[in-house]
Image 1 (cartoon, helix red, strand yellow):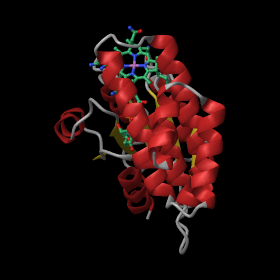
Image 2: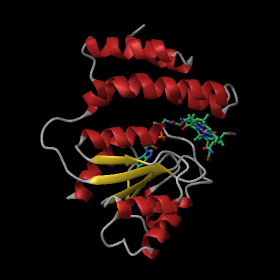
Image 3: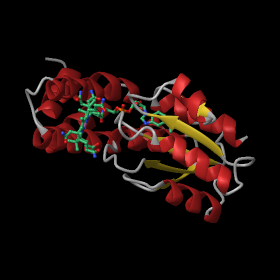
Image 4: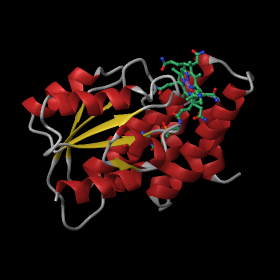
Length: 210
Ligand code: B1M
C-alpha cells in the first residue's frame, strides 16, 4: 500500500495521530506537499463525504476525519508556501453565518498565507456585519467568504449588500467560494471573484491586492 493510500485510509478512520505521523513520513520521503494534500488527505476526505451523503457514516465520524485532515494539513502548511516574491495585502476570511464547515476555509487561508498575504481568520458562523466591521477596522483589501451549505450561501449576498451600505465597495473586494458556490452565483450576488479551489483563491487574492 502506498503511503498516500495509507494516509487516505487512516483519515477515513479518523486516526489523527497516525495521519500526522504518515504525513511527516511522506514529507521526509520527499513526496511533494501538493500530492500529499490531493492524493492523501483530500482523497480520504472525499470518500468520507460520499459515505456521509449515503448515510454510511454520521457526524461524529466526519468530525474525527476532519480533525485528522486539519492536523495533517497543518504539517503541509510551510511547504505549500511558495518561494519567491511575496505579495502584500490583508484579507479577512470566514465561513458564513449558520455554517460550521471550516476545512476548505482553512486551506484557503493556508494558501493565501503561503503567498505572503496576511489573513485574519474570523472562524465559522460569521455574520455579515462582522466581515464588514473587521474589513473597516483592520483595513482589509479583501473579504473572503466560504460556504458549504446551499442554505447558507445566500449570506454571501448579504455580505455584498452590507459592504455597499457601509460604502466600502470601491476599495474592498469580495471573494466567494465553497462547494455549492459557482461563478454564476458570484455574478448574481455582485461579488468580485469566485474560485473553485484554495490554490486559485490564493492566486486571485494576490492579483486583487495589487
Ligand atoms: Co457537512 N455537509 N454538514 N459536515 N459536510 C456537506 C457540505 C454535504 C455536501 C454532505 C452531503 O450531504 N453530501 C451537505 C451539504 C448539502 C447541501 O447543502 N446541499 C452537508 C450537510 C447537510 C451538513 C449538516 C447539515 C448535517 C447535519 O447536521 N444533518 C451539518 C451542518 C452544520 C452546519 O454547518 N451548520 C454538517 C456538519 C458537518 C460536520 C460538522 C460533521 C463536518 C464539518 C467539520 C469541519 O469543517 N470542521 C462536515 C463535513 C466534513 C462535510 C463534508 C463531508 C466534507 C466537507 C469538506 O470539508 N470537504 C461535506 C461533503 C462533501 O463535501 N463531499 C459535507 C473538503 C474541503 C477541502 O472542501 O470545503 O469544498 P471544501 O473546500 C474546497 C473548495 O470548495 C474551495 O477550496 C477547497 C479546496 O481547495 N473553497 C473555496 C472553500 N472555500 C472557499 C473560499 C474561496 C475559494 C475557494 O474564496 C473565498
